[in-house]
Image 1 (tube, one colour):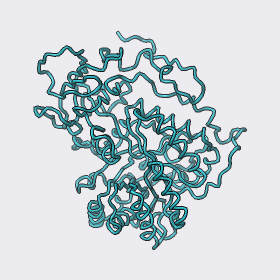
Image 2: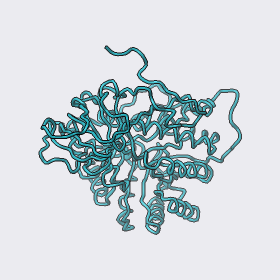
Image 3: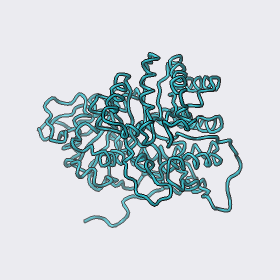
Image 4: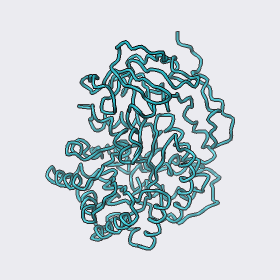
Length: 510
């Protein structure tokens, strides 16, 4: 008989924006109802029995493991002192004095790695709404929202996102940060503080976000690159990344015939400082938008040795088969990693600003063609409750689930879990165990009730159990009401006017 009472009770009586871990402990977490034997007394040594693990995300596991048609292995995972001691075939009797936790075939994944987010913009969609839902509308309304920004506003919204991601099972995030002179002066200091505060729970990386035309001013660009280096960040830019990307009238991110020379400035700055690069690229459905090709050529022209990521790349879907093959081949030679943001791109791309026509294009890059050609592909959240996407909660299972549906990644599905775990972890240069169910590594795991993909991807799995170093998280996701005093929804009689910025063109920031 299922108890009809609420499964957990929040006990937080701290002020708005604060988050006391002890005060947020649940009386009874949702997962307790189906795996009540998970130790909650501080024990970090036990055996997860009868767990299904995607074989592609295991490391150091027994060679005796067998996989099913979806690449899943039924295993027992032995955890000792918070680390994974062994991953062996399930059901083989072994002498052990460890507590046994039977998950009854439920899937066990490594914690997630989210390589493309915008936590500085998050949770602003109500106070400054994108009325058209288009990319251009997002650019304009995002610029307007910056009048609300101050340090406390940005810090609280960013931390709210981190709380959510942490509870959902994410252990590392790379976020792009608005880096104009005004918004950058607010967002970057908030990011630095949160990076230190959350170390060991969510590893954070920051990427500077500026439009390509910004690099015409080499003095300002040099100052930016120096600041990025001094704070351990990644250099970024938006290239051919507006609705008019690739056309001559896109003076912000395409920059006409100057694109190659401006990219050379970006690469020179990165080479001189040993910086990695992470671009927003081709966020449109225009056949003429070929920023990925220009960036890939710039990699080789500048003999760039760092890691390079290109996010979005939507316009690949508009290329002819021959041109697609040519661009992808150059990207592979250049060592580019492509990050796709399927949910956000499907929401923004091919949208009719009048709201009268149904979109006929998916707005998503050529995931399978890139993967088949050997170009590493990652999947990520992108925007969360802001002008570029009005929904989302930094739940990487949701990203994986919807990506499988949007991109038809489920036939076959066996290696796609890498796109939200080990692959982005490698690109971010994390610990060798990150993104894996790895023998010798920390037991940072997400235990799901769903046993097969047909179950895992059919329900939101809110009763998942997140283990960090073998200990279950007891926190719940934060309540949106924590941010009520920051909303100041458009049309309200009172608006914050304590700070005013020259927002300038905020284009290409999805």
